[in-house]
Image (tube, rainbow, N blue to C red; front, side, top):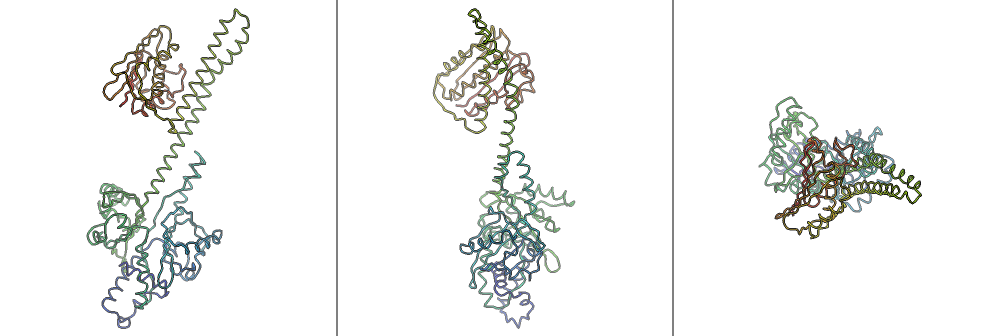
Length: 581
């Protein structure tokens, strides 16, 4: 069947003679053998495919002149066939691109190669009425005894372009830079079939052009599968063999199109189509062709299954093939692998989410900084003024008091800035874990000693270690975790209370537990403790950014650890950090 198609298209390209005239000639005039008659029947069958094509098909010679157009392309651009055949292909290109396209065309002919749909170019066509449309074009270059030809498959993607432009507009509100780099890779394939009109009934010409259309069939950058009315595969092109892993012999006349579909996905679509079409759609081949049977747009994304069990996303367009009486005789499925497009969409989605998070971080920083910086800055300003007023020697105590207030406020500002810097490094993935062997008991003891000055009156910090003292973690990150949890315990516990710090090395695990007897945390607040900028409902009167526990959780995660919280209002809180060594 593929060879017959080659004969038809190439003969039309080279002679411009309508094949229908050949089919109308008496058998005695054509003087065909039985083999030739069978070849003619194959031509008619392949022509039925081409007549149902729902994508524009265009063939040009080496000089860029149009030698063949299919009816769908004529409908797309609003021309009659005689208005295009013999014209330069630039007739279908907006004038502002015409001069450049001549150079591109000549360069393509000097180094011809196949180019699939959506190869990164933004292309436009112009209809007869002057309206411009966005298009995708798939090119193939082939050589016959009569010269070089280029075949182009043209899809109108104006609607998709409108959707992409709307998405870009929305993305621009978040970050113009993202919109500039956004390139929609979404591809759509409109109804595709194959239609052939004219061919000359000369045996020598049929032999000569046989390889022309065979090359087209063999080099199409799409999975093309034709089935009979029951779904049994009748045609299976080389791209389908390559991408799905089956040979034509394995599937033709042996399997249904459902061989390449996931049963679960088909069942879900069957239920959806039953609701949309208001009639029962049975899971299976009926689901795949349900819309095509009613001449409805049937382009959908599916997961295709390869012979080796691999999966890849495709856009599948199914067209019903009808005979002269309008009855369905089979179906034509055109599938385009959109793996790269889906990957690009996922990368874009992740980039947008990242941009949203960064914008949120910036906004929260400005809001929090304006609030949290006000108190220490006011303290520094007032204390600096008062220190300048105490000039006598006997006023040294007052000077030291205000100097200490200044130092304390500066430290507070430093802690706030360090929290923001830490979050920024975490978000950018710039935190590096530097493992080292150290004495964990001595390390934690030193940290507690450094924080003695933060304790309230009569507060007691009690430390106990169990197990081996040698530990392999990042001591700097562990220090930040201990200091953050211990400072929280001190801030949220009243004077005269006990704070317990326990560490334990057992087997392949190390645990850090810090328990206080302070205000406690409500069950509702515990669900959000480790989110950025979250502060408990009973923490309004305590200085803080709401970033500390978020940083602790991220640092623990970087060292293959996790953090949990147990708390009850009025009875204290226990944080436990567990590391898998």
